[in-house]
Length: 409
Length: 164
Image (cartoon, rainbow over all chains, first blue to last red; front, side):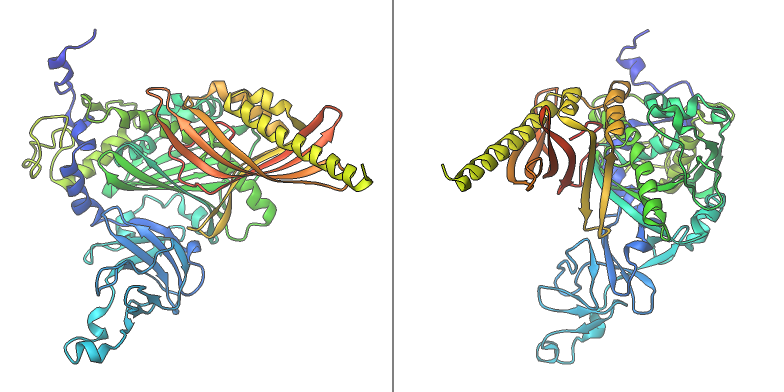
């Protein structure tokens, strides 16, 4: 039966853990608080260490809390992260997305910094600052950075944050032997800017019920043994792992069984881990896909996709991994376009009267159970100090937020 | 007509024919007539989309198929959920170099690809780049033997299932 406005805007007759207020996807106030309480305090992937392979290599990263960072490999081989902002007059220091620079020199007034963030040159320093200021007062703002879990450079804006290993916990333990048996290398990068909320993308990565959208997955996974036995394992800090499956790629016309795997994996084995608040390790045997999100506005998200193989790949093996990656992922892949089309569709109606989002499937933690999303929003609520089902009311209203449920500001 | 002039005229005629082939492929792609597009390609046709990434400082391949692979891709399109926006290509053939044998040619074509939404007809630039084509003269005239689309644009929104 179709519903009238009252029924449409009423909370579902479910536990509050099983639905989400749509304001979570539309409110600028909520996003501002997410940036302060979540993104500025959690570890997020900035890049992979293969993107800064040589000393003095750098890679820029727009941090989801709204900072512009430079990831720099030092002459001591340590990878550090700094605000990419000159402490003199606030100009961007590095303009290109990646490169190599022994000194980071601001083009504006030629202030120069070394790979450890120390200011090493100020033109006419004594003439202008006398003894009042010196290079020691102009160091870059360093951000905590740790490399691990497959060679990824994680950063955290919170100087007092727990170590990366404590944040990840055991979430990647099952995948780690394959990720760390030998060095990995990025072979593909692209950024999709999509008019949707970042959490909706992470939701898509956190549930498999939407496999009905994917012809490829219906053929190669859903109709194959083991699919409905895949189980979710939730971990502390909002992470979740999806149980493995061996995929039958050749069930899709024109595709073939993959010939390569990551170390320690059975051929065509598929492993997947979602990390709070918006990262996904997606390892389909021969190639690894990493998703990271950068919210640009409540309804606009930059999603960065990386494809990785083994650094020691022969040219033939690399070509095979790239081919496998692109069949379903990459901007022209069969699955990725469909996933992005899904969140685009959600994004088109954000703030247009959407009712509560329902995460109520319970199937003993198996593949179509929506426990992955519920686990994410439990962590979200813990960090935000409010329930995702009632963000205006639980533990206090959102500062300066609209009290009208569903539309936000 | 001198022999040199005759040779020049023959080469000019071949260049025109090759350019017309490129434009014919564009018209059929615009019409989403992918089967018709592939009729303008040889049986050993290869297709690739590549881009240089300043972010990872590597050349990237985003799609690469032989004739069988691209045939399958086209045949499977109706089974997938695909954004149905139209794509319109603005192509300009910049250079046609006919080989000495007069039976193969290398073509560089600048291409801008516009996407127009079905609802409301809003148009945006989807991608810019260049076609690097190899053409071959056969019994049915000039046919496309390979196409590599080198994209300058790397931020492609939700992407697409369609060959560009």
